[in-house]
Image (cartoon, rainbow, N blue to C red):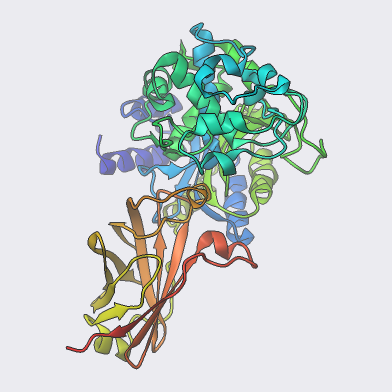
Length: 527
């Protein structure tokens, strides 16, 4: 079904259900025709629309940058939104939200008798072990990896990603504490779980999960990063749409049953989401990171549990409310985002259906349709644009390897063109409006894990917009809309000289941070 038809069905369904002219069951059939979760009005599922409006207002006033959210109650999506240029059909980088999917792959492998959580880790990798296997390493079990109680003194990820053989590097790290006794968040542990799945199944986690999880749930287009040895990274690197998160949460809420068919054993769902180990310093009533850890899921307040990833990628499962909330975002305050859910969405969920609230429904539809991340603003033109447009600037030596750079300005847009050893590349941007494109950048997009390891230039999907901040300064924002992140690129022109400065969104969240990329300096080439 094409996008316009889906949009029509969603809008028509909202309107007809709100008027009482179509039943939730009919909406189920409409949604099921294209594999989506069924849609319904909030009140029909016992959710007060005004609470969702309060949630949106809380987001607007909070400073958190949301990219999408979806609220599912009693199996029905009652509210959903994407902040343009983010879209429903585009995958989003999940960071550590990926871990819960890797845990689920272990669950399938356990159910199929391929391994047990009490298995010793060393048995899977006899050829990758260090020369001396310590007592603690020998005692390490699969369930210790799952519960982040490996025994390492620190997260192994920094050392792991600097090597080619990540398995061997992980197993070489000192196991300081007895496994199973102390919590230490450890993304390397989840990578090793991915490697174990590949070892016992002969398939990468993504391929192993496809027929068991993604296809039954109707999740398409997902992809997963790999290590240099061709193993999915496990602890991060999954890219999936927001509705895929919501469906994943709904599967766990229904204890492994999807559309009446058991997908995952109920025993595994309960085991994977129940308390296993307490984090240091907890529990505390106001902190969702101190409620206990499970098997690559976090316990949360209000008897909920969740998978989550850096900068606010969430699947929140709320059994007491029969609800799931999925979120993608970029924030430095993940607890603050969860507080918005607890303060606004949780009290909006009632124990029975509510009377229709047509005025609030209309306001909600209007606000959801208008969600957008605003492009930078200033002035759409400058006399400087005519003087520098199309001019070639020869650049000083730089770590990015860019030799020449040109900016072209035209009505409604601009184009930045650079040349490096691979040839010419460009980014198109609108003037105070988003323009979608793709470019192979000479530097990595902002990404916590990529910053630790070697970088290979890859094509990035970019939504770009620019504006003149003053008569001589043109500033662009490049949103990498398959990730939570963006770059601010500032071009300053001065008497034939060009300076280009970069500032990534990760650095912007750290007042003491400094972008690792040095500014570019160049001079206009004589014609």
